Image 1: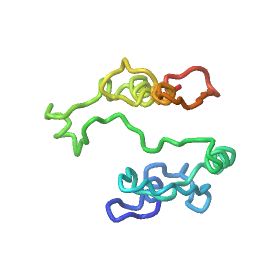
Image 2: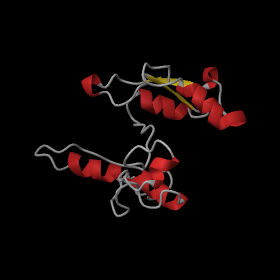
Image 3: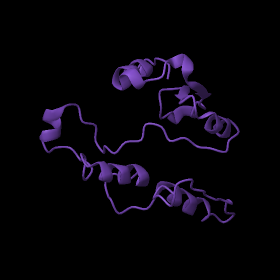
Image 4: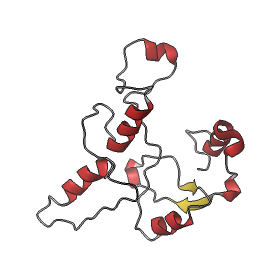
Length: 147
């Protein structure tokens, strides 16, 4: 993502966090992101994909793949450990549990671990119209909650 007025250079942050395993910006496969209109929910108009994911890039560009970027399980933003420890914030269950965070990422509803997968919920809405959309889902790795 290119620098944005409200965000630092996200690639520089990525390089700092990932260290020696990070990809240089020039090695990433660039994808362009639609503007999103007046309710723009992300600061970037371009993202970079891992260089070995050229098939995913092609699928995204022909409209056959959706990417969910920057998903996370926090309910309220947490500025620092003092704010975290204050007890005044809504936090997801199992915040420091890897398996709980995987489940929160899959169901995209951090407030509860009992929700169904987000794509399944989207498909349910799309097929519930008077003139329903035709939808299908495929998994390349079993039947995770996201489906």
